[in-house]
Image (cartoon, rainbow, N blue to C red; front, top):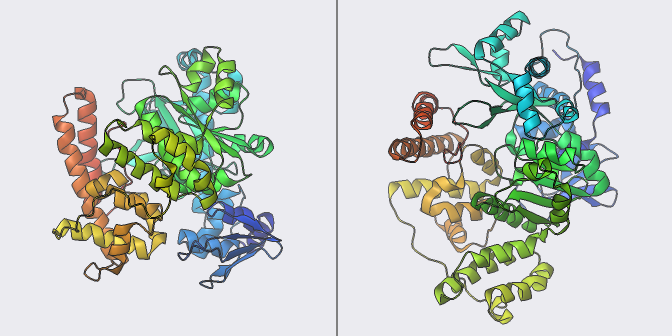
Length: 553
């Protein structure tokens, strides 16, 4: 059991505004802070956090309590689990009357193996030379605690010699189980990058292969401590600069962050192998910085920048986009001694809203009237996600890019969208039931996004994205909300529906990979084996497997 005095010490060391701010976008309102309630859907903020009383209360649904109660409700944890979660977030050491803490044990294990990874790097000159060749200095290696892990057997020996229980190592994401139940190390023969929470507590690792492994980068799996959709690499080191400079640079990889910091851009962070999501917004909001998206200029980078810029614009963020030219990334340019050129690109970042308008417009052949109509619809839909003042300010810009009259954006000009009736096929009904469930229970959306990507919905992808972005006036969502023939799902039915979708998706991926002639034999074998021997068996056992995009491995 956790010692009561320890619990009181924890309560006294944390601030409810900071705790709630990790999950919800708070805005100052007099002596308090307000937000849309995370426990029920609402458009007008009725959720209040009081820093003086250290409590929260929603005047809409009645939810309320202290920091521990909030974490219990938002994370669906028991009282002891919530205390341990908070202790982990704030690097607080709990005292126990008996037994041991899952979180403290996991953190102790992660800290121990991190020191071992660093020691391994110190003894491996070849790996160090690789880092030097990438332009990384000794001071950066030390500051970011870069390490190295060798073969799986070495990891297992280390864990055994230090009396770390393998089940605890599995919970911490350091090891996994094979088909026959044997343990093996998740990271092998890789440069390691420790990943910290915003409050400086180690929660997992990223690894970059030095061999021919098809997966160039991998991260720790989802654990009680590690949720990649709520973490930004380097944030714990960057936050002081972010608050001071009122600027935050979002880039794409570990090396980009390290080289940015090495060149003096200490406000840089990176997403962890995933796109920027709404779950990142509370963290990005802290300190109210200008957000600069610094992405590669290739097709994937432009697509990621467009999606992120749309989301940030709709969220009321200020900032811009930099796309690095010539196939280079920030790390390459800085390593080549082009820090001044990087600084110039950052200073000349294209503001978020004009970037979205220009990028959408350029993706269509505006000499074709039908393509222009489609482009107009897409731009108008984007503008509708902004405040009325911002819409009015950028209508002339949009009209100029599209070559249309600004008056087309006013009034009730209808969007040229397909208004097909919902098909009554069984699989379509299942998808629509899932959508209606999320429409009526928006708090479930985050759970679904942990395992599902919008691309998995095929023709229904635009509808799902409208749902995620709370475009509640979308014609099909309005129709769905009043369609009595489509039923909502309970939690068990929702889980079965997700398992069904995931099973179909990964079987389709298996077939597509087997026929893909562009893949090397090694990569094809790796991906097919992963689906057949890892993912599908876990789905059959009822485990909701976190989404993986095999197109980007």
